[in-house]
Amino acid sequence: MLVMVVFCACSLVVPVHCGAQGVPGELTREQVLQGLEDADPDVRRGAYIALGSVGNREDLPLLYSALYDADALVRKLAEDAIWKVWSRSGNALHDRMLQRGIEQMQAGHYAAAVRSFSALIRLAPDFAEAWNKRATVYYIVGEDDRSIADVEKVLEREPYHFGALSGYGQLMLRKREYRRALGYFERALTINPNMRDVSKSIDSIRRALGEGGGDAI
Image (cartoon, rainbow, N blue to C red; front, side):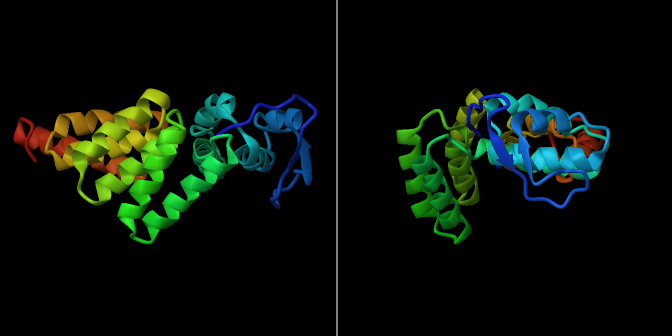
């Protein structure tokens, strides 16, 4: 299932750590934004790497648009950048708390992860990714109703969160609400057409509904 700083235009120096041709070691914010529109895919790649490092919520529309870029690597870098933006709250303490919860979740310490994400939510209730990560833990441990409640909080804050939309689809599948699952998967794929597993799920549901003639798979 299943970020964010305001820049002073032209004054911020953005470090870029990439080997893309035509991309210098440092770019100003103005150069980063210009690079997003460059005809050279190598320049666009470097620009999206930079934007992933320092981008903010205002940059999300640019990143969403790049999910439709002609270059496959640009699309992948844009998706990575979106996740990085979503995962930055603008507060160093809150970001460390998110990372700690993620580490606990990855280690299988689910109760501890829920406590960490819950503490973060109390401190930063508008931080969508805190809700999203707790929703993920609830999904893993089978607390589907709690997961759904958290996903709805995510989508209130980040309506284009394709990870949360995909997660909602998975939750609806587990509840055997196949048409609702299809709707959420389709919304996710409209935002991010590069989600192959979501595309396969859509195809499977459509075939099954067509064969079964109703909400049965």
